[in-house]
Each structure stands twice: as structure tokens, then as C-alpha cells.
Amino acid sequence: MNSRRITFTTLIGAGVLAAAAIGVGQASAHHAFSAEFDGKAPVLLRGKVTKVEWINPHAWVHLDAAGPDGVVREWMVEGGTPNTLLRAGVDKNTLKVGTEIIVRGYQSKDKACTPVCKANGRDVTFPDGRKVFMGSSGTGAPKDGSDPTDKQ
Image 1 (cartoon, one colour):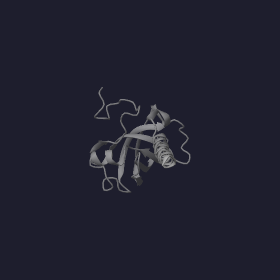
Image 2 (tube, helix red, strand yellow; image 1 turned 30 degrees about the horizontal axis):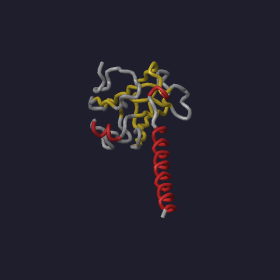
Image 3 (cartoon, rainbow, N blue to C red; image 1 turned 30 degrees about the vertical axis):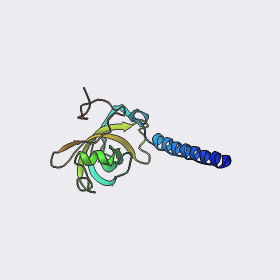
Image 4 (tube, rainbow, N blue to C red; image 1 turned 60 degrees about the vertical axis):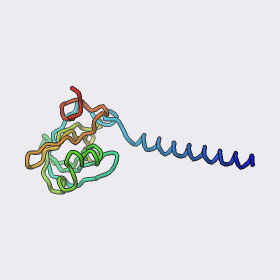
């Protein structure tokens, strides 16, 4: 009886440790804005959507956009969670491949553009003029007025 109790307690303890390890792994996959993006490097991207990834913890919008030098580059723009974007009115029908959009955001710290340029999107403007906040709030992104929940 005593060995059964010890075995049961050991199994429960192992289960709790395994669950904690999984939670830590998932938590470390999510990052703060300042870990990857430069709040002092704003970008304004105009281009056509080439791909949209509706994945957690952040959706990614891929677009081909011309830079100030006129060269068209592929960009990966990080948005908020798919659920956040859906609540803001952005879904797979509003971000179809080929849609021309304008994205305001901040470039990645490395600025390497290898293999693609990366940015954190703050807002997206659609062809009809509708503008939607697409960023992730509360992660250290600059308070620039894009996030309607930010207290200025």
C-alpha cells in the first residue's frame, strides 16, 4: 500500500513537471516587441499581399513592397494574434493574396532583409481607405497612437 502511494505521488509530480515544462516552452516562444523590432526604425510599406499565415502567437502578412530606393522586396509583417485581428475585422477575406495594402510599422533590429525583410505591423490600410490596428499591444511597442487601447 505504501509503495502504491509513493508511485502515485511520483506519477502526479512527474505530470505536473511535464506540464510546467511544456508551458515554459510555449511561453518562451512568444517575445516582446523590443526583442526583435526597432521602435526607432519606422517603415511604411505599400504593396500586394503574397501570403497570409494565420498562426499563433502572431499572424504574418507577406507582401512585396518597394522601398525608398524603388527596389521591390519581400516583407514578412508580424501582426497580433489571429483572434485579435478577427475582432478588429481583419480575416482571410480582407487579406487575400493580391490585395494592395499599406502597412505602417517598425523594422526588425537586424535590418538584414535576408532572406526577407521583417517588420512588426502597427496598422494596415485597405484599398477602400479603411484603417485597422494590426499590432500586438502590451509588448513594448512604441505608443504611437495606433493602438486604441493604449493610454497616451
